[in-house]
Image (cartoon, rainbow, N blue to C red; front, side):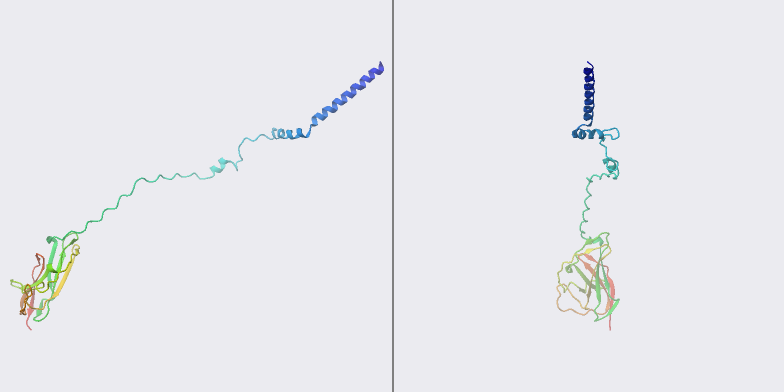
Amino acid sequence: MATAGTAAVVIAMIWAAGALLGSSTTVKGTSDDHANAAPLAALSPSNPPPTGRLSQAGSPSSSSSSQPPSTPLPPPSSSTPPPPPPPPPPPGPCPDAVTQVTATVGAASYPVGARPVFTLHITNTGPVPCIRDVSHQFRALAVVPAAGGNPLWSSSDCYSLVTHEVPVLQPGQGVSYSVDWAGRTSAPGCPSGRTNVPAGEYAVIGKLGGLASPPTPFALTSN
């Protein structure tokens, strides 16, 4: 019986030692257990899980806040500029009321046989530009006796030239035409038998259509 008890004690000790060895093997685990244990270490309190925020240097909020705010562009204007004003109308004809006709003489007196110089002046005395037909067939210079009477000579008697001259006359401006008189008489149609005008007192008159200038006196003197 003592032997049996001793044997039972020995068996119990052997079983306890085996149990201790088996428990130590379970704690070490296999290599697969170490692979599964790594994430558990990353989730330990000393290494908390990421919250989804980026660091301040790389966060979208910090990047966008460093850029200046964009300024909205103004909407395109729907209004169109007004059209340019129409050009002024062309000048109208100069009425007789603003058309001034005058005649001048190159000198107060000329000797018989000289060639006096007469000038016809046509001036716009109105406030606006206007046009006037001053063609050769409408203008003339004429010599008359100082005491009055029929013309002794006219620039249109022997010169039947037809022109087309319709200038624009600015306010206060005009045109002028000069002619040298040979000192002889004339008549419409320029008949032959023209004679020299003797010494005496005369006047020159300018004409444009139905307008006539005041007479401008001059003298022819004998040699």
